[in-house]
Image 1 (cartoon, rainbow, N blue to C red):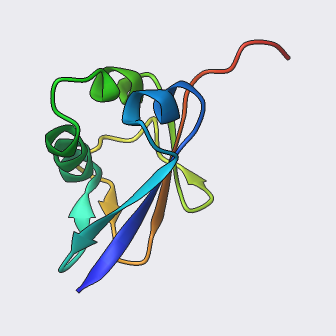
Image 2 (image 1 turned 60 degrees about the vertical axis):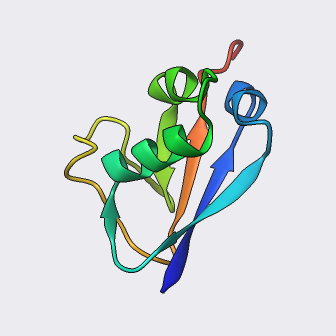
Length: 88
């Protein structure tokens, strides 16, 4: 048994109503499964809509352009959701 740490930034933090949370997992799961579980944990809100527009980091590795069904997230990992930022 382990956990996956989730960190939210800017509008993702606002949509989640928190800056971080953890998911308990028994084994690696896909990014798609992480998103499904986050949607279940935050029903009726706009979290998944905001996360869909976010850049996603798995540790230090950007995974936004990869198929979420192919991204494996292991226990002990950290996922960060970074919405687009204005400015330069």
